[in-house]
Image (tube, rainbow, N blue to C red):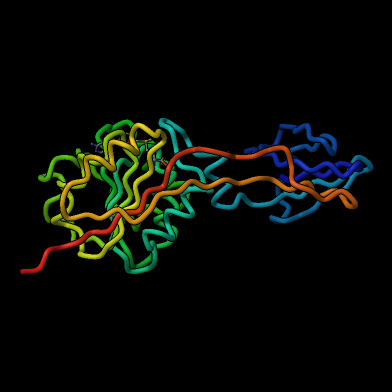
Length: 253
Ligand SMILES: C[S@@+](CC[C@H](N)C(=O)[O-])C[C@H]1O[C@@H](n2cnc3c(N)ncnc32)[C@H](O)[C@@H]1O
C-alpha cells in the first residue's frame, strides 16, 4: 500500500491483507475488509489522505516478503549486475553462491523463459530458502538450483558452456579456476565482494584464463517530492559492495 497523508508525506507498507485485520498508516487506519474484493490499484480516500492498494512489484516482493537467510544483493546492485552479465532470454548463466536467491531472482527475470540459470550453493538450508523465494516470484522454471561447492571442478563439470557468471561468495578467486573450462571465451564474470580485503585478494590471486576489466560501486539516493522544495533526500543507500567485471580469455598458438 502507498499512503499519502493530507500534509503530502508518502510511505509504503508491505502487508498480507486478511479479513479481520486493520492497518495503521500515515493516512489513517484501513481495514482488511475494505481492501479485500477490490481490484489491484484501487485508491481509498479519507480526510487524512489517500491509500493506494497496489500489487507488489518484483522489487517490493523481495524487499517486503522474501525470506532472508544471508546477506543479500539489493536491486541497486543486482539490476546493474544483471545488465553487465547479459541476463537476457536464451542466455545460460552460472551463479554462486545462491544465498537467499535475491540475485538469482533478478537474473531469472532477465533470462526467462528461454534462458537457464544454474545456481550453486554449499548450504542446503540457504538453497531451500532461495527455492521458496523464487517460487513465490514464479521464476523457478528457468532456474536449476544445485547443492555444491563451486570451487570443486566436479560440481561444475558438464554444466556449461556458460555465457556469463555471477559470484557472490567469500573467496571468489578460488572459484575462477574451477569454472573456467565451462565458460565461453570472452564471456563476462561479475564478482560482488563487500570488503576491500576481498577485492585486493581477488586482484592478486586471479588465475590464468581471466582478465580484469574494471570495478566500481553503486549508490542510490531518494528524492524529496514536496512541491516547491523538490531536492535530494537525506536517505542514501551508499556502499554495499564492489562490483568487479572480469572477462574469460584464451591463448592462441
Ligand atoms: C552473501 S550470500 C549470497 C547472497 C545472494 N547473492 C543473494 O542475493 O541472496 C553468499 C552465499 O555463498 C555461499 N557459498 C559460500 N562459499 C560457496 C562455494 N564455495 N560454493 C557455493 N556457494 C558458496 C554461502 O553459503 C552463502 O549462502
